[in-house]
Length: 561
Image 1 (cartoon, rainbow, N blue to C red):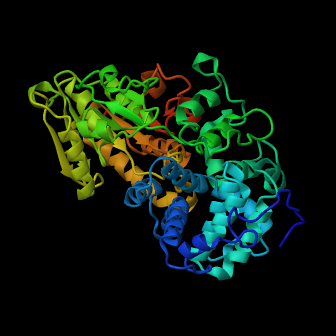
Image 2: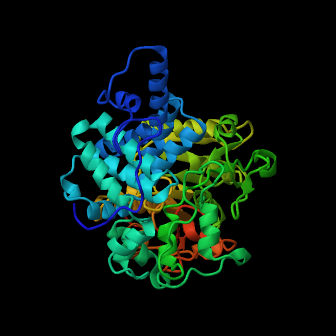
């Protein structure tokens, strides 16, 4: 083992057990794969085994999520709810499994730095399941209220179950070394530089790849190293935004520690943005513009959104009943603001220009799956008499869009259609629409609260293919909008290569396009200006939303291909 870290905690034997420190009790070891002693087959033993199995199930569920994310590129936010339902985990057990899975994914970079200091083997040479188990144990030791002995012992049990007894001693030794210090003390050792403005320190402290830290710095521009400034209500942007982003509710997550270290000095804008990416998001929903009023839909303990008149955030509980009733759907407030910005953007249609049926506007949602923005756009369009076409490349996602619109489309409303279409090879003619929403495929690095694994899954090389697609789609959108019409280019990423760089390239290469002042269109949303003030950039730490980028482009003449 590297280092000379002497344990400060004492490890006794498990209560009621006879094993050595860090080893599983017989019942737990039996459940973990049959490596412990075998007792008789009486009912009492069976009951003990069932109790042990249930006690280990939240951790095994969290491990299964980590393994699936690593091994088959699964999405944690899709897989975990299925596993919780299949394994009938609810209440505190479900909360523990959720905290361990998401918390480990969020903190992976930090935990790897600590584990590397505690291991005599390079992490890259470990079997992937062993590394997953070590990360899971490190999260329990450094970022939860789980006791040190329980965190180490259950990790050893898990290692025996998943890998076999040969690795149990190694897992035990590494995690006991991790347990000798708290997270703040470890950061003093493993975080390079240690200065709040140093990107290497920030990458370890806030568990983001260095290239993502650099991209966030570029997105924030000159404000990156400035102190997180005041927000409405007298709170700092970081405080207000982190609260809205969903800091832990101790009633539902008592296992998480209250005060993770914030680093030296006050939070900068960059540090606050990175910290907010690690916050647990609350569930935000959207009512339907043509449906019941928000106050008549939201539960009594929900909070209304700060800027979207359709948004509300659940304090707790399951959003499924509201979604099933069709009165609201899960949708981030930033996503709602993107649709609202398109609906508010001023058109400049020449007098006498041909329009849709009856002179009504025609709107297009160009990459509509899975249907959240299309649902809101349909309601906004209906309020003006406009029709909506929702296009989606993948048939299964187009079916989701159709279902979302069917829940809210009623008699007497303008027609809406859902089509399967490739936006880069569109079936519609040029200059066919008045307003187009292009919510472009992107890295998702603005939604790390909800998809924490995205930061580890993406690399700068991945952006090359994405940005080429984004340019093709935006060029197609500019061809499809009529003179005087508006295209909203939207990404759930603040990375400049996917946002301002794409827009600047198209504005330069496509004639007859002007950039509208997106922050002015969203004038009621403070601190919305991006580093280029013509664009809007929402942030979790400022607005409690995903990091949504919005550019509004108006066609002034025929846009060439």
